[in-house]
Image 1: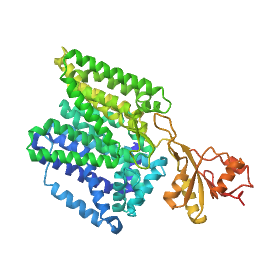
Image 2: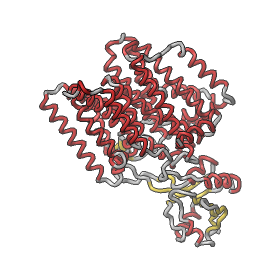
Image 3: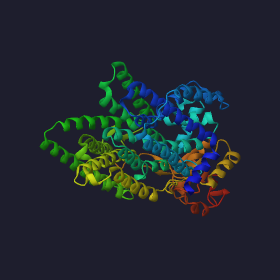
Image 4: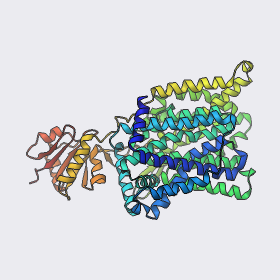
Length: 590
């Protein structure tokens, strides 16, 4: 109850921003549902249209944000009036299309609505526990959103995925909110709705609503990914993941239902799928690699199903052996081993359950199950495939990096779990005990057990690992802005960044709140390793040569050792001395 009340308090405190985002969620959901119904007619059930609308709400909202920002509306937006007129114009025509669930779909419809409401409140509790968006990536996103709002698109163009920044800029400008609140609340709403996007594929493929709901619960609370990515400030990746299942669902519909529609409507479905894929890539470019991987896995799965039984079994054993080899090898790599932390440490019981259920999935839905296994195998392999010179401004890369794959693995696992539960239902229904079992009660028991276990151990609060801004830091930023010279250059703590299989140096990442100085107040900063020994003459000489006249010691994170600064009063003079944060002047150069 404390989490729910904290989430509710965030809604109340930021009601303009929250209402804006929720209005966009509703409008986007309705627009997607109505559009797909116009294309596919009665070939899908009402609950499938509702779930697809929730899966795809980001697509029209992203397009709207691109239009809004591209015509410079953020420069003239002074009130809510234009925004609300726009939302009313969108919603009123859509309200004529009623989507009343059939009686057998009502419980599922109610579940999805209650799930969304509770998930939003639980996720917003995260916001109540943090001062700023977490980790050093968030400072970069803040700066990019400022560039978008200031119509300085070209200064942000070196960063190759800007979808989240356009959307966050759109939301904050229309709601007249600050950027940090916009990032935090928008990110949590995207995260809260994301699990519903896995429902459609499982429900349509298995015709089991319980299996679809099970996949939703697994993706929401089964593992601490993708939610933990917010602690890393991975907002663009989160938005890309929010669009990815919808794009895959559209591709699935083209395969399953494309031939049943007229050529013009089939063309519309292709066009819609293409737009969503492009929007996914604009949100995060590596989602394009994931689409390619899933397409390859899908064609491989169709070919596999046509094989005779013996070659089919042999092929599956080869894939299973390759997957096992990848897991063992990755676990032995210091940098890559963390890829499995959400799934083999705290999440191990849920992962074991999914693997056990996959036996039933393979029997009842062999093609879809094989596609999931192939996809996991290719996703893991992609962290070893080098890509050099493809992205301007970036050196050595791999197709997918370790954090992105770590965030992404929940998707095929959740789908496997859904297919597995449906397969178990079929097995029990056809067993000798089938006449004595009520399948809905069996499924309800599994759903309740997994939900209670997962939610009870789930941590909705910000992780201590990634908080680099404290309350003292916020005060210090204001002090620096008002007290230090405008042209002052400030040394800030950074740490080496390594996330690729090669274990090669990839640059520096912010160690403490100093990384926020330039985005927030526009002061010049210079990165220095947080392990710098300020008692050494060569370090002082380096500061003097670089014209670094001030040093920032943050309240938390990987910060400079201020005891070294205090031990050399002839070189460093404390200007601001708070319990957590300090600012020193470098006086040893004089």
